[in-house]
Length: 286
Image 1 (cartoon, rainbow, N blue to C red):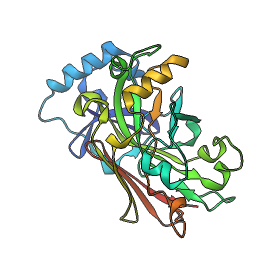
Image 2 (image 1 turned 180 degrees about the vertical axis):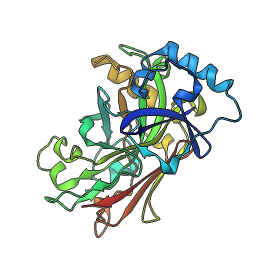
Image 3 (image 1 turned 90 degrees about the vertical axis):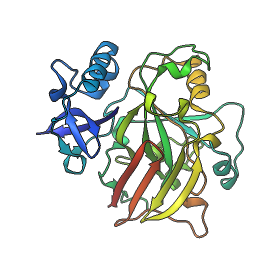
């Protein structure tokens, strides 16, 4: 299934994407949790949803995805855990090396924005860079899980743009500030359940396009730390909870590594596409 979070008359809700239309959860039965975050945490409710979706009526109506007031797939995840320099080509272009343990940093939920929402260039910096990434959403609590067991804890996948203020990223050895400006972490358009994709999303094409021009083009098989290994390693130190998000790093081709550097600016459109997952698109504004 492809699940979508959106606002209906100002209230957060969700539905299932069926082609170009979103079927509201209310049409699929009663007593479903009100948000995707709550649905993910309720295995019994998700099982009921799966049964309802398989037995759905062919005359169900919904709204066009393009007409909805979208929300990030998960609005307030407990944790957004991000990996840095996880693709070999990206490590090389930045003069970095990939170690025996992933580079890990956190994002705040206030930095997240939805598909089609404006990605904002702040007044204090013009060095806003793009990063096409795969987002992993946890569906089952994971603590001390093996790499072989780790994918059992994954609910689904989405596109993510880990947009970064490069000058603020480099103000200290910690990347936190440059990664957490408001409205810079685009997350969507839909959350694709793991059964619809290859295990661990291995072997999928990933790219970013700035105003239609391909900037990054790679394959998720090029990640140094794949989804299963990453989830296992993270679970050694912390409990991953339903609704937590793990963002898997970006391939080469980012703006700061180009000559001259390419920064996103007002009037641009940035897209992230992952094969089988979708296309995340955001206008860039001041």
